[in-house]
Length: 474
Image 1 (cartoon, helix red, strand yellow):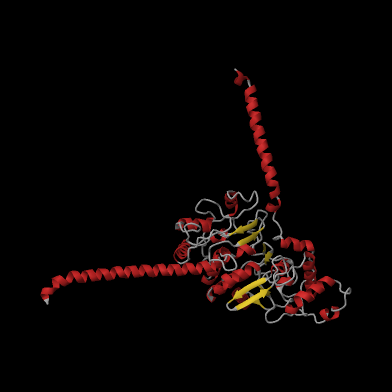
Image 2 (cartoon, one colour):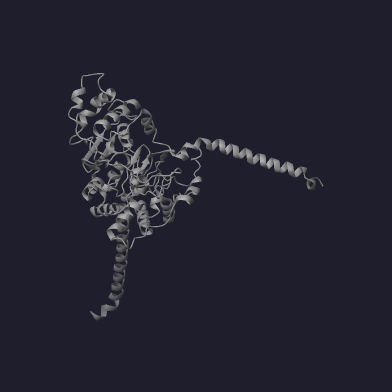
C-alpha cells in the first residue's frame, strides 16, 4: 500500500482542486440566483411590468403600453434583453443611467412618465440586482413598440436636459437614523421603488413635483391621485392600519374606497405581491407623513347615506325630477349593479361612504364612468364597464349624460356641493386639465420663428454696419 501513495497523491490533489472549483462555481451560481431573485422582487415593487407590458396579452416588458399624459401619449419601450429592440446591449452602467438619470444608452432623454425622478433614489446594490434580473431571467423579445411622437416643442427630447437640471435630484436614499428600521424600509419603498410621489404629489406649471406639498394629491391624466398625507380630513389620517393594509393588498375597502385607473394597475401588478412586512412598513411611513390640509370640513369617505325613496318616487313620473336625465341614466345604467338605494352589493361598491363620490373634485367619478374599472387581485376580479369612448358592453354616454348622472349621484349619495358640467366631462375625456406648459405650447413655434427672424435681422444689420464703417472701406 505505501508504494501506491506517490501515484495516488496527484489524483487526490486533482480531486480536491476539482471539488474546490466546483464549490466556487456553485457558490457563484447561488450568488447569481439570489441576485436575480432580489431583482425580480425589486422589479415587482417598482411596478415595471404595469407600464412596459402592452395590454391584452402583450409580452412582459416588451413595451407598447400607451401612457396618457397632458403632453400626449407616451409609449413605453422594450426593456427585455433583446439586442435588436430592447436593452440587450446595455451595460450595468447604461442600465443605471437610464433608470436613475432618465438617459438611454444612445444619449436620448426619457420623459418623466418613466418615474426616474423617484428611481434616482434606488441604491447601487439594488440597481445591480435589477440589472441581473432583466439580463438573466426576462425573456428577450424583438417586438418594436410604437414610437412616441409628441407635438412640438415636446418632441425635442434634448429639452429634458434643462428640465433635469432644474428638477432632478440624484441623491440616493439615505436612512434616517432618528427613525425605526421599519419606517426607513417604508420610506425607501414609498419614495424610491413604488414611487408614490410621482402620482400623489401636485405638479407645478412645468410638470415637476411640488416639493412643498408632498403626497397632497395630484392629477394623473384624467384621474386624480388623492391626498395620502396623515391629515385626518384631507388625507388618510382617519384610516386604520388595517384599512390601509387592505387597500394596498386588494384595492377595496368597503365603506371607504376602491382603486381604479393607475392605482388599480399598481395594486394588480405590484402591491398585492409584496410581503406583509413591506406593506406594514409602507403604512408606518405614510402614518408619519406631515399632514397637508385642504380646508374641507368632512373626510371624503364620510359623505352620503342610502336613499330608499328617490328611485321609487321618480320612476314612471317623467318631467317631475329636478335632474330627470340624470335619474333616467342612473336608473337604466347604474342601479342594476349599484342598487336603487346606492348601497351596492357583493361585487359592486356603495355610492355613499365612497371617496370617489365624497371628494372635493369629481375627476375619479367621471373617469370611472368614462373608462370603467378592471382590477384583478388573486382570483377576484373587480369589473365595471366603460360608458365612454371604449364602451363595448354598454351604450356610449354623451358628456351631458355623464354630467347629469354624476350630479344625480353626488346630490343623492355623495358630496352635494360638487357640481359637474358637460365641459368638465369633456376635459376628463380629453385626458385631464392641461398644465401651463401645455397651454403655452402653441406659442412655441411662432416664438421660435420670431426668434429666428430677429437673429437673422440682427446678423444682417451687423454685416451692413460693418460694410459701411470707415475701417471697412479704408
